[in-house]
Amino acid sequence: QRHSSATLGLGPDDAGLAQAVEILRDGGLVAFPTETVYGLGADARNGEAVARIYEAKGRPSFNPLIVHVASLEAAGEIAELGGAAKAVARVLWPGPLTLVLPVKEGSGLSSLVTAGLASVAVRMPAGRVARRLLEAFGGPIAAPSANPSGRISPTTATHVFAGLSGKIDAVIDGGTCRVGLESTIIDLNGTPRLLRAGGVPVEEIEALLRLPLVAPLPGEVPTAPGQLASHYAPKGHMRLEAESAEPGETHLGFGPVAGDLTLSATGNLTEAAAQLFDCLHRLDAMGAEQIAVAPVPDEGLGRAINDRLRRAAAPREEEAVSAAR
Ligand code: TXA
Ligand code: MG
Image (cartoon, rainbow, N blue to C red):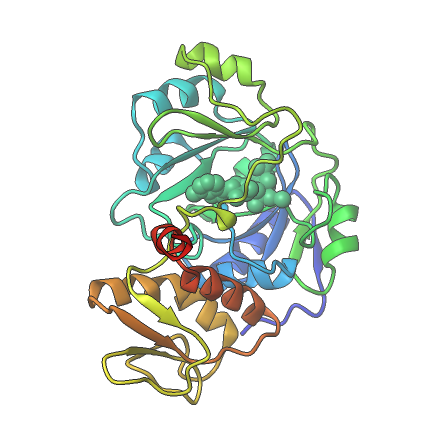
């Protein structure tokens, strides 16, 4: 377990980057500059490290995170790069463009990074410090913007310290971000869609794709996938706050409530967050039709876990429709 009581300031030189790599390998959190905004990075293959991102940001729900890579080849190890993806990536990567693509089988990504979805958001940043960090680390780095939840994105190391000091292990100070605005996000699963306007003008992408992008209406805030029906939920019916299981129910445990499988036998919320989506997928694989879920304390990461569980337990669209009839 890491202690983030003092946040280290690192220089963007070899020594600073080596220390950052060591912290990331150890499951810690490092904020680093990209050309868009500062990102809060963790090893994308380490579920507990990724869980700490949500904890540090105080995010009340698990939105999927952007995975940063050093090369097109590295992108191809975690995502399926179709023709459209290659066409835009060859021209616009490295740069402020994020592509949402099918996750590659055997990617090794933590399921918390994708929030259990079958797609992953991938970006090859252009910022020099970000690129050197990714190369030195040699693996995918999950990073949302390095600000507390609900606050504006940081474009200097000073902004990061102001928001997250004491909650993360280190900040690499690489000066002011060149673009200062988050990446443009395009969903390339099926018909290309614009999910977020950002650093690359939409027209440039449309020209490369030779297609208009289905765009949000003017002034419309793109919907976070956490709010969408397509967000992962198990097939079975879920009952929450269940200290014990009824006959026929499969019990998902936590802490003292053992269950048939458990989010965390020791009642550790970081571990539970890291296990959550894997557990939901395993319940599907087990064919569980009635699922009872043990109570999870509504504090720290427990709030995000409970938010996710409540969404997964909410009546499904077809159920809601038949209930309204
Ligand atoms: O410029 C940027 O993109 C910065 C730097 C650090 O790279 N990162 C950033 O991350 O803005 P964040 O977490 O603040 O925003 C990521 C957005 C969220 O709105 C999330 O919902 C969306 O990307 N996203 C991530 N994975 C997704 C997926 N699989 N499908 C759809 N949307 C996804
Ligand atoms: Mg953000």
